[in-house]
Image (cartoon, rainbow, N blue to C red; front, top):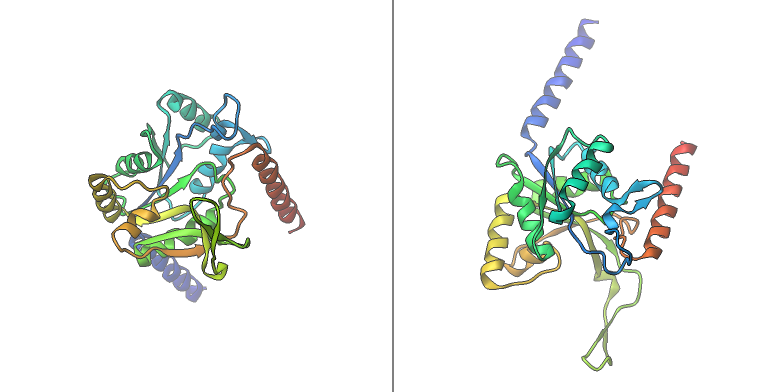
Length: 257
């Protein structure tokens, strides 16, 4: 009995040390898009997939991830109160730090979200709310790699044959798809390093469509985690149908277990 207690105490102590050593990390969830490709008047982050709003599905995954300590949601200024009300309705409170207004581009919104994180956060994980099939496991795998490498991103293999074409639409080259990956989110970074490269990009007038490109622009390496192609971005009405199919398959799998 005494041996068991000593062992339990040792394990508990090791876990406490490990937790203290893990860098404090903020999740920045971007939900400020206009959803023009979805159609309709309701922004896609408020649309439901299997009865749960897209935004909430993303927030829940971050809320359940042990590597995330706090959450910042970036949305349109007009939607701030709606987002707060939605989070309250779904009881998202323990990790939610703030909901802020985004900028006029994704790049600016991400920067504002990172700046809004607590000063004690050494790492940030930036995520598009529209990738609502993200899981706590995916988030943790990307963040844990960023702890070791400073910059990491979720990706998935490209399965189609990809052609490079010229301005007239003529095929110039067939790319080797074994070396191609589609970038997804979350994308996790050392926070101070991210702020530095983002500020440098703004000064140079560099425009990017994902945060990895900020690091690529200054010659820094971003490491990848293959998180599978279920973590796709819900952009069109057909994506909603596909997302519901994935969720039902996951629920069925859990039921079988």
